[in-house]
Image (cartoon, rainbow, N blue to C red; front, side, top):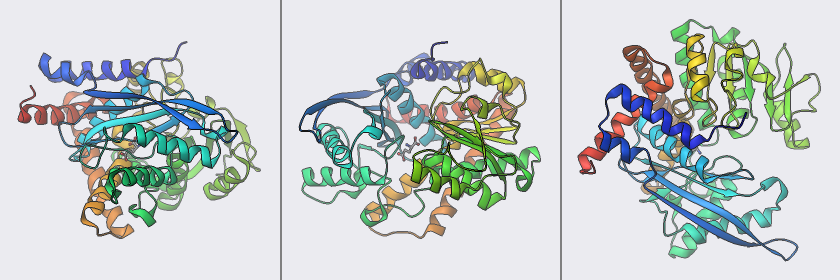
Length: 415
Ligand code: GLU
């Protein structure tokens, strides 16, 4: 089956929400399309002396609520449609956790696994040289996403600062601590997601100390999710995976040892004391909590009926198709939808921006506390809305977020 187009999915989800809340046609028409996008070609000198041209994008989906915010992905299969969908989801995400920000996303078609550090730095700087007039601390603020990291954010901030002739820490978030990063940004996506898992477990009477967990993806979100599930809740991590495949141990895996193994060998798959499991089978395991933390479109109409988890906590963006949503809802699987579950990353990005503007930095404990105060009410507003409309959590999240963005557009006189 061909993979469903992410942007089409995001528009379908919005249309269903608009119908549910009787959104007027004009507001819906504005919300269905990105407000602006920039497509760039990036010539980069490679280590062998040749010039390679990479395609890059930046999409500002909607900035009615404030400057646009969203990560930059470096991925060989990046497409403009995916970036559009991700920019839309950023818009709903920021509104849902009540940040004074709009939504955007960027991407470059490239394979970081085949590039040297020098090539990555030149590509990162080339991206900023091409998009700098489009972004800015009061316009659009990038951040890390799939295959981008704090070092890349530091190069991009540096390039933007050089072009502007002054330090511009606020142009990008997810930076290293030494150049204006925030304490607690590294594990914020996972930590924020676990606030929502904790609330969901209370709602459904699941004892997290005895819970079993499977995590698909072992990057920034997935590793910290596994690690924090164990350290904060005492849950048992029975399976994890990365792009090469997965590992399973009924007795529980040690997330730190798995991370060390992946750092050393490039993958979790050869980790000792575990059996192999595929990226497909990991989604169908008998667990209390399933955490998709890799890419979009992995739970579909074809496999949703086989998901046995009680809670699906979506740390990835867009892992579940609309068809799968209906099946999971019918089967009583509680899905904590992506733009609620993974909003902790952008919430702490917002705290980073505030600290950059203030030039005063907070402790890790302050950040954790403020993060919880964003995530917990957001979870409950979605849960209450789901009950009120008798619908699934994703639709409820759309209702809360879309109403907020629509209200801002109306106040500004856009509609
Ligand atoms: N890339 C992350 C996301 O999808 C973080 C975005 C940000 O911090 O701006 O939510």
